[in-house]
Each structure stands twice: as structure tokens, then as C-alpha cells.
Image (cartoon, rainbow, N blue to C red; front, side):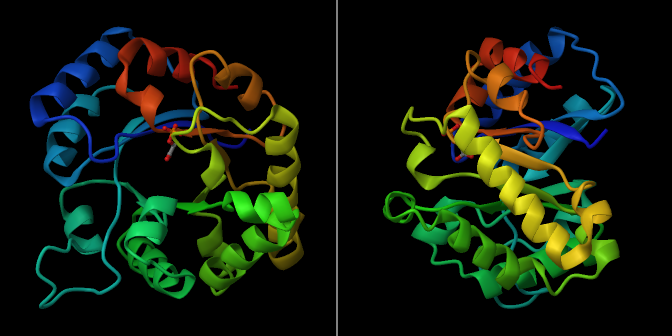
Length: 253
Ligand code: PGA
């Protein structure tokens, strides 16, 4: 079975102490993950090492960075490189979240550079895509997300593309309480897999986990994750409440 992943995206929330307490509360629930199930915590940079040591002894629990810069190193004050993230043993990094695209003007081509740097540094990128409301209303979401994939991912070799995780996050569903219906999520996830299959073949496309993000909650996770092409979720708001995220981890196939 493909990797099924519950990924928490804390965004710019929680002090170090609050983050530590949240992780303690979640880990105390002692949820045993099957070999294909993963719980990943994408936390702010100052929390990475603490999170890594919190999850170190829990099987299939991992830590992720929320971003990295698109250059190797140098005079870029305030930025953090993929190599630095790797050097503290962090195995995942979120790339191209819609908030980065919107507020920091990250483009598809810049994101392709970030992906390259992550892969060169043995970091698994969680690549985000998804359309704004205007595109959904115009009914052109398939073309929109296909372009995001083509421009950021399709330079990768078949061996490399297999190493990434994709998160489909419709922007109109992020932080709004509006969730895509299970049918809408399944439909576009299947389409993304079709686009991947068209480029890399069905065998490879079937190995790539595609997470859904956008108002995933304790009470809708099970239904969303039950769709055949939805391999878990990238969760913002509900990942900040231990009892909610515990339920979301338990909802994994
Ligand atoms: P949300 O955020 O769950 O609060 O909608 C999801 C995300 O932005 O990754």
C-alpha cells in the first residue's frame, strides 16, 4: 500500500514550550502506526530539533521543516538552506504551500529549485498544489494544478519523482472551514495521478502519496481519507489541538 500520511502544519503558531506540550500530549496517546502509516509534524525552524528528539523513539513519527530557500548557501540573511535542514536530521520539508506562493510570491520555477535542493540533501519534499476560488468557479482547476505539477516537478527523473509526496490543497478550503467534498477531493486526486501517469507511467504514479489539505478536521478525516486516491492529509488548524490530531492520525487507512 502507498504511504498514508497525517501531516501537521503548525504554520507560525505555538511557542517552543507550547509545541513541546502538544507533542507530549499526542505521543502519550501511543497510537501504533502500521508500516505504511506516518505522522509528520511540520514545525517552525526553532522547534525542529526538539520535535525530532520527541518523535525519535516513536515508529513512523517524523519531523518536517515548513520551507527552505531556493539557493544552496550564501548572503541571504534570514533564509535557511536544505543542507542545514538535512544537517540536523530532518527528513521532510513542505514546499510551495499556498501561503508561501501568495505572501512570498513563490513561483513554480523557484519551487522546482527548492525541490532539487531537498532531493540533493536527502529530504523528502511535500509539494503543495491547489487552485484559488476563482479558478474553481471557472471550472479550470484541473488545468491549473496540472500546470503547477508540470512546471515544478516534471524535470525530475522517474527515480526522483517517486521520492516526493504531493499535497493537494484547494486555497478556498484552507483555514476557511469549507472542505472539499469527498467526491471533489477524489476527483482531483485521481486527475493528479492521471497527469503523473501520463508523464511517468502508471506504476510510478501509483507509488506517489497524494495528501488532501484544507479544513481537515477530526470529524471529516475518516471520510476524506477513505477515498482510493486520498492518501491522508496536510492539516493546519486541527493539528494544533492534541485530541483532534490524534483522531486524524487514527483516521488513516
Ligand atoms: P487548515 O490548513 O487545515 O487550517 O485548513 C491546511 C494547510 O494550510 O495546510
